[in-house]
Image (cartoon, rainbow, N blue to C red; front, side, top):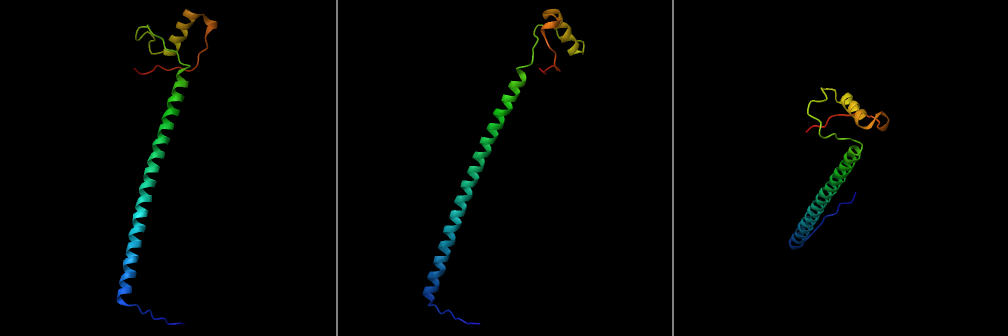
Length: 110
Protein backbone atom coordinates (compact mmCIF):
# COMPACT_ATOMS: atom_id res chain seq x y z
CA UNK A 1 0.00 0.00 0.00
CA UNK A 2 1.27 3.42 -0.89
CA UNK A 3 0.92 6.26 1.55
CA UNK A 4 0.64 9.59 -0.15
CA UNK A 5 0.58 12.76 1.80
CA UNK A 6 -1.06 15.69 0.18
CA UNK A 7 0.70 18.83 1.07
CA UNK A 8 -1.10 21.95 -0.03
CA UNK A 9 -0.56 25.51 0.90
CA UNK A 10 -3.46 26.94 2.93
CA UNK A 11 -4.27 29.38 0.13
CA UNK A 12 -4.49 26.56 -2.45
CA UNK A 13 -6.76 24.54 -0.16
CA UNK A 14 -9.04 27.54 0.26
CA UNK A 15 -9.14 28.04 -3.52
CA UNK A 16 -10.03 24.40 -4.10
CA UNK A 17 -12.82 24.58 -1.50
CA UNK A 18 -14.19 27.72 -3.13
CA UNK A 19 -14.08 26.09 -6.56
CA UNK A 20 -15.86 23.01 -5.22
CA UNK A 21 -18.52 25.17 -3.57
CA UNK A 22 -19.02 27.15 -6.80
CA UNK A 23 -19.26 23.94 -8.81
CA UNK A 24 -21.77 22.53 -6.32
CA UNK A 25 -23.90 25.69 -6.50
CA UNK A 26 -23.79 25.62 -10.31
CA UNK A 27 -24.87 21.98 -10.30
CA UNK A 28 -27.69 22.70 -7.83
CA UNK A 29 -28.85 25.62 -9.99
CA UNK A 30 -28.79 23.41 -13.10
CA UNK A 31 -30.64 20.65 -11.29
CA UNK A 32 -33.30 23.10 -10.09
CA UNK A 33 -33.64 24.50 -13.61
CA UNK A 34 -34.04 21.02 -15.09
CA UNK A 35 -36.54 20.12 -12.39
CA UNK A 36 -38.58 23.24 -13.17
CA UNK A 37 -38.47 22.51 -16.89
CA UNK A 38 -39.52 18.88 -16.30
CA UNK A 39 -42.42 19.99 -14.09
CA UNK A 40 -43.58 22.47 -16.74
CA UNK A 41 -43.31 19.82 -19.44
CA UNK A 42 -45.28 17.30 -17.37
CA UNK A 43 -47.99 19.88 -16.68
CA UNK A 44 -48.13 20.76 -20.36
CA UNK A 45 -48.32 17.10 -21.31
CA UNK A 46 -51.04 16.42 -18.74
CA UNK A 47 -53.05 19.39 -19.96
CA UNK A 48 -52.74 18.19 -23.55
CA UNK A 49 -53.72 14.63 -22.55
CA UNK A 50 -56.68 15.97 -20.58
CA UNK A 51 -57.80 18.07 -23.55
CA UNK A 52 -57.51 15.09 -25.92
CA UNK A 53 -59.52 12.91 -23.54
CA UNK A 54 -62.19 15.59 -23.22
CA UNK A 55 -62.43 15.88 -27.01
CA UNK A 56 -62.64 12.10 -27.36
CA UNK A 57 -65.35 11.91 -24.69
CA UNK A 58 -67.33 14.69 -26.38
CA UNK A 59 -66.97 12.94 -29.74
CA UNK A 60 -68.17 9.61 -28.31
CA UNK A 61 -71.13 11.29 -26.60
CA UNK A 62 -72.04 13.06 -29.85
CA UNK A 63 -71.83 9.84 -31.84
CA UNK A 64 -74.02 8.12 -29.27
CA UNK A 65 -76.63 10.91 -29.48
CA UNK A 66 -76.87 10.64 -33.27
CA UNK A 67 -78.90 7.48 -32.90
CA UNK A 68 -81.21 8.85 -30.22
CA UNK A 69 -84.68 10.17 -30.88
CA UNK A 70 -86.21 12.96 -28.86
CA UNK A 71 -89.99 13.18 -28.78
CA UNK A 72 -91.26 16.67 -28.04
CA UNK A 73 -94.81 17.72 -27.36
CA UNK A 74 -95.99 14.64 -25.47
CA UNK A 75 -97.46 15.40 -22.06
CA UNK A 76 -95.38 14.51 -19.02
CA UNK A 77 -96.44 11.18 -17.54
CA UNK A 78 -98.10 9.91 -20.75
CA UNK A 79 -95.79 6.92 -20.72
CA UNK A 80 -97.18 5.73 -17.36
CA UNK A 81 -93.74 4.51 -16.17
CA UNK A 82 -93.26 2.33 -19.25
CA UNK A 83 -91.37 4.55 -21.68
CA UNK A 84 -90.35 1.87 -24.16
CA UNK A 85 -93.85 0.50 -24.71
CA UNK A 86 -95.23 4.03 -24.96
CA UNK A 87 -92.65 5.04 -27.60
CA UNK A 88 -93.19 1.88 -29.63
CA UNK A 89 -96.97 2.40 -29.67
CA UNK A 90 -96.54 6.10 -30.42
CA UNK A 91 -94.21 5.45 -33.38
CA UNK A 92 -96.45 2.72 -34.76
CA UNK A 93 -99.33 5.21 -34.72
CA UNK A 94 -97.32 8.03 -36.29
CA UNK A 95 -94.97 6.26 -38.71
CA UNK A 96 -96.43 2.85 -39.30
CA UNK A 97 -95.02 -0.43 -38.08
CA UNK A 98 -92.57 -0.99 -40.96
CA UNK A 99 -90.81 2.40 -40.77
CA UNK A 100 -88.71 2.15 -37.62
CA UNK A 101 -86.44 -0.12 -35.63
CA UNK A 102 -86.27 -0.06 -31.82
CA UNK A 103 -83.03 -0.26 -29.85
CA UNK A 104 -82.75 -0.05 -26.07
CA UNK A 105 -83.95 3.33 -24.88
CA UNK A 106 -83.91 5.48 -21.79
CA UNK A 107 -85.47 8.74 -20.73
CA UNK A 108 -82.87 11.49 -20.39
CA UNK A 109 -82.79 13.46 -17.19
CA UNK A 110 -83.88 17.08 -17.49
